[in-house]
Amino acid sequence: MKLELKKSGFMGRSTVGGIFRSKKVRNAVFSENVLDAGNNSDFIETGENSGVVARVIQHKPAAVLPLEEVKDRIRRELVGKKAKEMAKAKAQELLKQAESVVEMEKLAEEGGYELITTDFIDRKNRKFPNAVVGKGFAMSIVEGEKAVDTVTLPTGDVAVLELLEVRDSELEKVEENKRDQIRNSLGFAQSEAEY
Image 1: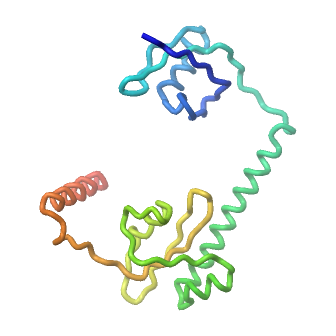
Image 2 (image 1 turned 90 degrees about the vertical axis):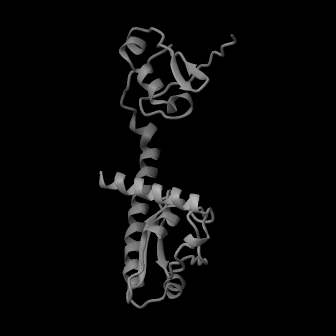
Image 3 (image 1 turned 60 degrees about the vertical axis):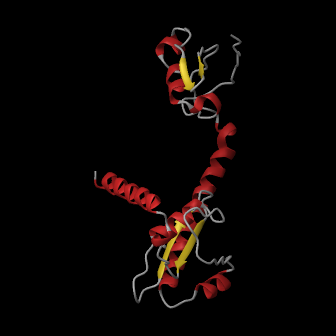
């Protein structure tokens, strides 16, 4: 049996990359037996045909870093947080305008925003971020009202969506066994939501 020995750099309790994406591995590494006593961990299964035994070679206790080391990172985080807050506030302002009679084209033009339009999309659409597709399918059209909403993207950007039309699925074109699967999935999802 050929076993591969690997070493990592320092990691913290919140490290989730590489082998440390496994919560079992993180828990083992920070256990009293491994961290404090210096023992090897028990075998930890990380996949169907893989696993690890962890050992801490060197432990560096948590410490407060000097301000000089962290000030640029703190500044970036604060600026990013403020930018996200401002984007959300602006999106809410645009949402209120879009809910009135203002057309999306006019809002985009006046604000210098990118306007993206599309025909019908399905749930498997990969042209738009999952958050946009998910929000679009969660929206509904009420007669006499504009269907507009906002969604925050993983980047922190905020999009304003307008749903113009909903097309019913063509269930009669779906094979009977597929329809049964859909019904079962919907029933399961509803029972989970009610639970």
